[in-house]
Image (cartoon, rainbow, N blue to C red):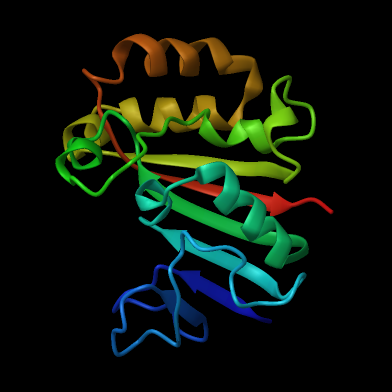
Length: 180
């Protein structure tokens, strides 16, 4: 199994190829992640991890197209990024994007506005983390439940659109499948 850790920094996943623009000790390949193509052949990786990196890059659309190119068919792509309501999303001056639980649906085959990219992914799961207070009173569980069940999409939309700056999320984890 071939694994890629994009923007790995000093925390490269065990067994992964690490790519980052910073020449740190755990980085295997030094490459500007805003420069395409990445130095890999098409259909190379079974799994790709992008942990707290996509919000720093110039173009999410172009990055997703590149991840799609280097992912094998049905490869698992895991993206972890702050929710737009998270203080950390706005605290870091190097963040260029502030994302929601809806951000990666633009790459789904059935999405109405998917014509901005040719990369196709299936969103297999989304999970949010919340502060201990919201976890303790069940808000995190309720929102994560709504993320897994399309019949509760109105709850997700109401939280995302009206309540997310009260019941703030932290990090979001997206698990996508590369469709080829």
